Length: 350
Ligand SMILES: C[S@@+](CC[C@H](N)C(=O)[O-])C[C@H]1O[C@@H](n2cnc3c(N)ncnc32)[C@H](O)[C@@H]1O
Image 1: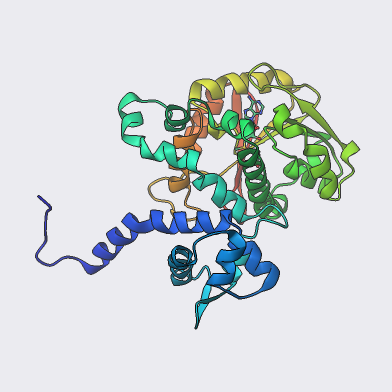
Image 2: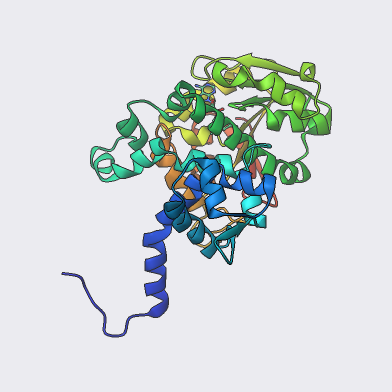
């Protein structure tokens, strides 16, 4: 039987309704991004739902429900006669120009991710990684085996890096290092920005599926690709030597404590005695800290997504990361906050 309350708290009721229907907003956002609605509106300006349906090969009546809902949450503007116009929000979701929030939305909400959420109760019972239970392989392997997912994932990561890097470089000074290596650095957006700003040498280390396009991406950032050595490999086998600083951005958080400790042991073996490991990460707030960061990210919510998708990890609190690194032979030197959800934890070798 459903419990009732005589004087239900209106605000609490509104919150419950909003929470239970939040998936509808996510799905509308996903499908509109995926079929290119925001690209069409950005390229050609406001259009009728019939024109949009014709260009996306979709049914106009069904599409109207979705676009109207997106207008209700201010992603689009609806005008008389079923005309839809772009907004500042929809411009962020354009995917045919550069890595954007649209790529991140498509990566986070793509069907393979959704399948993981569908079987969450079973995964919880079994204590296994939901994405792997649903898809039979890990999220990186899945993305790299599927061209669309790979392209979307790589662009999603490049977007996140691009949106956070200016704040990072304002807050943390990399000029103290000769050679910086980005481990799990994706297409190289972060290392390109560090090299461009500080003139140090750079190394990018990642799996071959990503590094194969890194040179072009780095050139596209206005950085001489020869300034960055691209190294391909598996962090569980070894980490290349030669850098006095290793940065890891939103990388170690994908792994369980046991796997993270193996990775950290390989990083330690690669660093010189005076080297530094610079962890770049969003931290889940402690109970007395604000829950939402300046860029709107709620790390405690994002942590669940990471935990559902990745091979055993999840964003952690500062204290949890500190304990993990100390167990792996590192010593916390300092924590630096940026103007967005990314923070820095700098570690020396203990
Ligand atoms: C969540 S993404 C983060 C990318 C980038 N650091 C950023 O913040 O945009 C994790 C990265 O780790 C890489 N990766 C996953 N497993 C790896 C492994 N075993 N060895 C090296 N890189 C790996 C992936 O290819 C991907 O580029």
